[in-house]
Amino acid sequence: MMPAAGVPGAQGGGNVGQGGAGGGALAPGQPGGAAGGGGGGAANQGLANDPLQAFYFSVINQPQPPITISANPEDEDKDDKMPPGGVDCYGNERKALSDMTRFYNNPQLSDIKLKVGFEEFNGHKLVLVRWSEVFERMFSADWSDQKKKEIELVEEPECTEVFPAFLKFLYSCHIILTIENTLPILMLADKYNVCDLRRVCIEFATNSIMPKLPLKDVFHVWYQYATKCYHQVLITASVKALSPKADDIMSLPDWNVEWLALDRDQLVQFLKSSHLTVRNELLVFRAVIKWIESPKHPERMQKMEDLLKEIIPHIRFPMMTPEQLQQLENHRIVEQFPALFSTSLLHAYKFNALPLESRANNPDFSSTSYLLRNYTDLRWDKRIVLSGYSQFNKLQEVMPRFSTRSSSYPHSSWDWELKIYPKGSSSSNEDFRMILYSNVVLDQPRPIEYMVQVVNDSKVLAVTSGKKNFTKARYHSDTDIDKKVPLNDLMTSSSQYIVNDELVVQVFLKPLQ
Image (cartoon, rainbow, N blue to C red; front, side):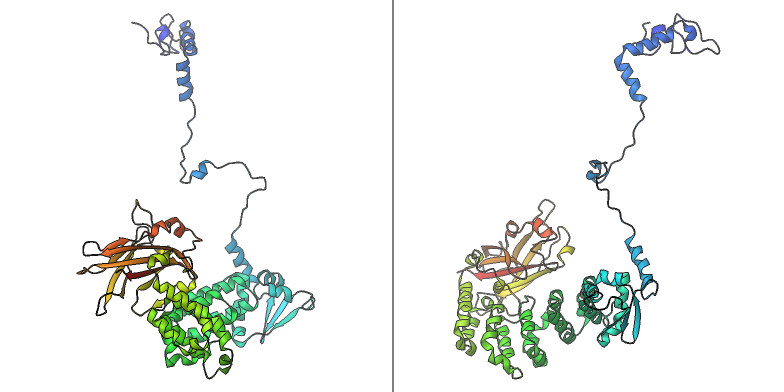
């Protein structure tokens, strides 16, 4: 029988260490193959002469590495070299702040006493200066004697009560806010320019206080303070809280005192908002004239022309219907100052007269004047707000319904539905889509043209238009807004389309002949 090729020991007819066919048996106590007369040596020589066999043995004798697969592909390409400047490493910041709290009103290492009302507080200049440039100037040589160990702070009574909480925040970066203490703490944050505390107070006020307050408290407390201190976020939140009752505020006797008491800047801030819920824009104009002609403020009548120049840009004349524009032309104030109104009226008539396709292609129709408010009259347009855009799920659809005027006689309403896919319509179609539906089974065709816009709080950002004869069988039309607004542009953190986590859409319809 032929020996098996490549098998250790086959050359001598025996196993390695046992001796080949020409060798003797392994003697007790002797190394394997020593008595075999060269059988084992022949096997070793076989390994040396066969490279494949040698490679096989070298592989199986190597240590095998562990297998680790990272979920982050970047980890596999990570460079293990130490950066020349070293690596940023941080300790426990929360614990550090907690440890700092023990120095609040603590005489240990205190180098300044703060006298507020009848109380004194042990302070530490380094802590106070770290938070407030006002304290930094206060402790400088230009302000006072640097050797002085006590300084008196004169505060409003309501601020004196909350000063301990304000001071403790500077040591702990933590505060408990309530409906009662938020405004006086905000006043202290403004006075000493503690930016982080100001932000905390404003966020708490807008999210947790204003939605629960009576509207007159919002008006008299928060809106008044916000406009006096020019807190734009707080102004916007106050106006938004008041907006659902804007019609009442501007026209009902119950709100006359508040409306007429607004100063010019407060009035302008109110008129800037697209959130106002009003019947129509003509009512807004009449409310402005009522404000100017208030008997309790005769100085306004004396400066009427100057006031009109400032206020007219915030009245949205193109959003008036042709019938309302005609009423406006006959108003005594317009007749008294025709030069102030002529350009605005011309643009408004042009906007109303043009087909929607022409409006969509006209870049002049993109300013604030062409943004809808929340009008409650039955019209040919509608403002739709998708609030909390970040909370919408992928593939989720929303279907707001609205009514418009109709071209039939006697006048009735047409019902519509706008199916919106805020974050993609399917797993294979990741587009921002809007589809316009007729919301009823149609007995008669509805030939219309439509214009859909995406806007922010200051201008029109994207627009698309089209024509459709809605019938019983063909009752919907894709607006093709995805060709104007890519979904990726909506999803970015700095998207121009998303303001305060809201996406605002305007829909205009017009019957075709």
